[in-house]
Length: 116
Image (cartoon, helix red, strand yellow):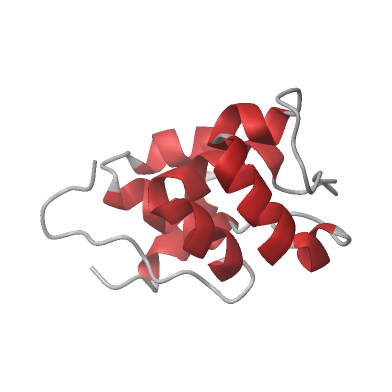
C-alpha cells in the first residue's frame, strides 16, 4: 500500500531487472530477503527453492531467464531505494532504520534526496 502523494521511487539500474519482473512490492520483499548475497536460480524450478516460495514458480522462472547474469555477482542491497520505497509505504524513519539495519541518520540522508 502506497501513501497518497508518495509514489514508489524509480528503480535504479541495478534493481530495474528485478522490478520489471516482480513489481515494486515484491521487489522490496525480495531485496530484504536475498539482498547482499549470491543467488542461484534454477531454469526449471521444482517448488523447493526459497525464491520460488516467495515469488511463485512463474516469476522465479522469469527471474532465472532475465536476471541470471546479475546473480553471478550478488543481489544488490539497494538500501537507498528500499528506504524510499518503504517510506512510500508509510513506514517511519525509525522503522526503516530497523528494517534495513541502518541508523536513522543514514535513513534521513537517503530520503533527503528523494522526490516527495
